[in-house]
Structure formats: structure tokens, C-alpha cells
Length: 162
Ligand code: FES
Ligand code: FES
Image (cartoon, rainbow, N blue to C red; front, side, top):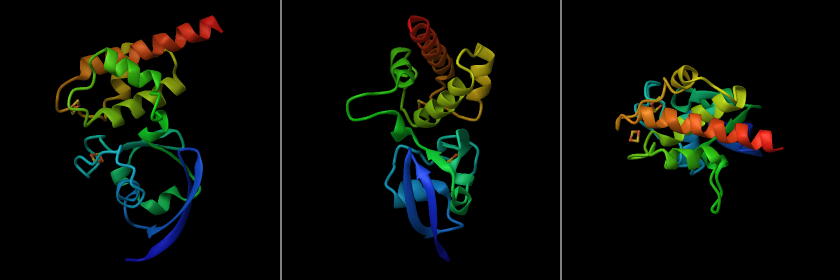
């Protein structure tokens, strides 16, 4: 397989990797870069477990060839927390009981994060739509929707206190 240098921005930092251009972004992130927060479920674009943001849009990393990320911004779940802090969305997921086995959670959180960035005050229907590509085998959709709406409310309160 042919390897090539690919330059892109990963979680805000410039990165150069030497990798198989036709390999998936998912395998690049997990196998080569050791970012295991992005999960591999179906490997076929159907479960959303591998969701990452590509230029701020949620994509299934298992379907994106590594060559396609040249010059782009990739954001993974690792960008939302540090060893001491978690993102308010993640706090809402815990508060609302939206994390069961947790396998779908990174993808759900990133889909919700992209939604709230584009639309800080979504309706329940818009939340449902935004996470429609993320499957949860623990059937926790209701709690996930509540968590996203809870995070949106916190954002509203924070901006009204500014
Ligand atoms: S692993 Fe990518 S959509 Fe399922
Ligand atoms: S929490 Fe288990 S798959 Fe969603």
C-alpha cells in the first residue's frame, strides 16, 4: 500500500503523518495516533460510533480516506476534556444518565457539540435529528436528548449572565 505525508490540524495542533492515503481516518486516529476515544463499531458508516468533526461537520471517520483530510481540521472527543476538566455537554450527559455502556457516547457528544455550535438553542426535534446517525445499543436516546437540551440551557444561562 502506498504511503504519503498528510498535513492537517488535529484538535487545534498542526500534525504531519506518513500513512496509507486510502486507509481510513478512523484507523489513522486509533491505530497510528493512539486516540482511542473515537470508537469503531460497524466500520461501514452505519452506527456513528466513529464520529469526529471534519472542518466542524460531523463525519463517520470509518468512511473518510486519510488523503481527504489534507489541509483540514479534525476534532476528536479528546479535544473536549483535560485530565481535570470535562466539557459542559459531558457534564450534562452524566447528570441526565445518558451514559450507559458508553460506547456510543463520544460520537453522540461530538454530534451534539456540532449542533450546539451551529444552533445554540435547538428544539427537541433538532436534537433528535442531530443524533439520528448515532446508534445506541443501550437505547438511551431519551436521556441523550435531555442531556443535549440541558447543555443548551446552561449555555443560555451563561450568556445571559455575561
Ligand atoms: S464505525 Fe463508523 S459508522 Fe460505524
Ligand atoms: S450507552 Fe451503550 S451504546 Fe449507547
